Image 1 (cartoon, rainbow, N blue to C red):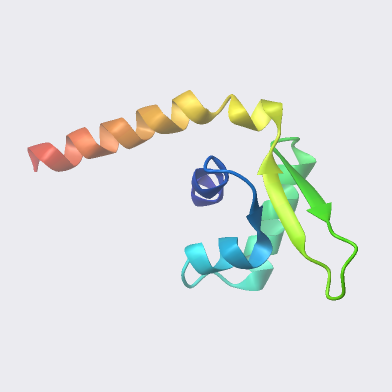
Image 2: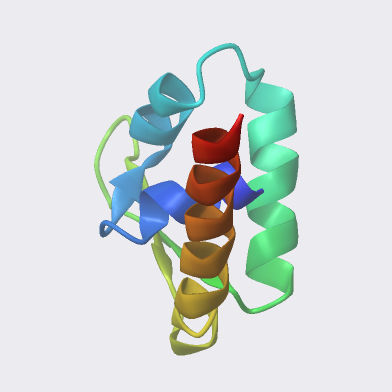
Length: 84
C-alpha cells in the first residue's frame, strides 16, 4: 500500500498507471489494496463515463496527512543506505 500512496502523492493516477508503476503486481492485488484504502477514507475513486471507463484515484484530505510520515520513512531509508 505504501507504494500506491507514494504514487498518489504526485497527483491523480489512473488504474493502469498505478499498475505499470507497481511492476509485477497483479490486477487482483492492486484492486484489493485500492478498495481497502478507499474504504478507510485515504483515497477516492472516480469513474469517468467513457467506454471503456477510466478509473482515477487520488488522495483525500485524510490521505494527504500521511505525507510527512512517508517522507520521514523515506529519509530514514536513505540514511540507512548511506551507512551501509
